[in-house]
Length: 382
Image (cartoon, rainbow, N blue to C red; front, side, top):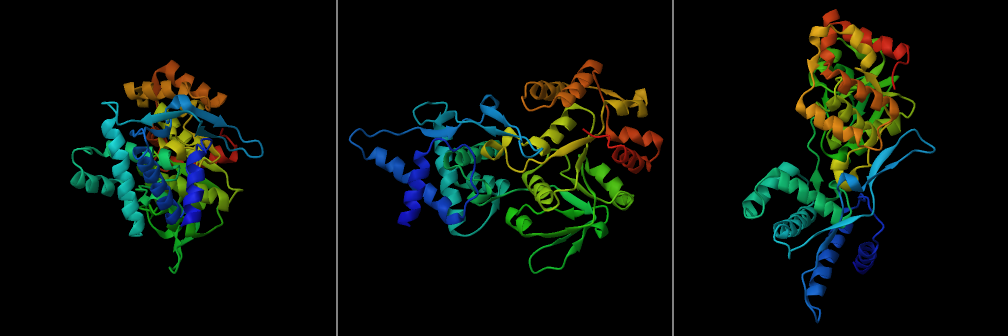
């Protein structure tokens, strides 16, 4: 225990770390204990005061881009700028207390060797501390504060990812002490991706696929599975059913490490939201705080893209929504967006229109597989 405390003391004195470690429970508990000891030490000093909590600044202005030198993968991460939570500022006092409440709850979870979802944590905190927690958003932000203070991942804190993700196609997945699951035989519902990252890390995976296809929409995923596109194009199909959750990104990253020769191709709507989803898989997300850089994969944009608009009737194009314009503004301001992606975004903005993948059904419900196959054969992805 003394060694752990010394290690954690050194951690708290090192202000150059700006990423979240994946740690065993005893090390996380030690960091929480050191945070409490530091707090009590200041209160016990000749000039007692309630210290501010130094947190890595999670605003986009503190984000940086890492360009791969020996790899094609680039990612975003947070730099060394700090912000604080203070009990002395009226508008930050409750946020200060919330950090300690969540740390206390995480300590109990780790002692009990349990894992909880963010939703479960919210209801527990709502019951125990209703004066401080009234919304899921407050809990989510406070968890990120704790990650930024202790600089360890949410999973290390005992917080499990909620997953909406599904996988299907030519891959066998085997959990410890279980029979292997053939994901090509799971039907249109696919194999549900667990939120337990430890379980996902332990999966034994085998495949004869030649591609991994990431699909934005659940309905499109179901269509491709029903049509068994993964047999026409030897592939693994994966969807997060919209904006990617941590568990789905984790599994995709595991696949990219296990099968490094398989290209990862994304099929998304031609609108700013579709591009934002692709970019989250490809570069990470500042919304993930200190875990922003984790699980970035070298994803290529298969479609829909501007040169596909010739396949879509004019009447199937819809005007951009206000939300699209907000997302586009955020993407344009990002350093990481590569030039050909910027050109696609500029075309969206210039035309003022958007196209859904479903518009390709104009050519028949079986057209999607043909569209994907032609794109792959022509290596028409960026």
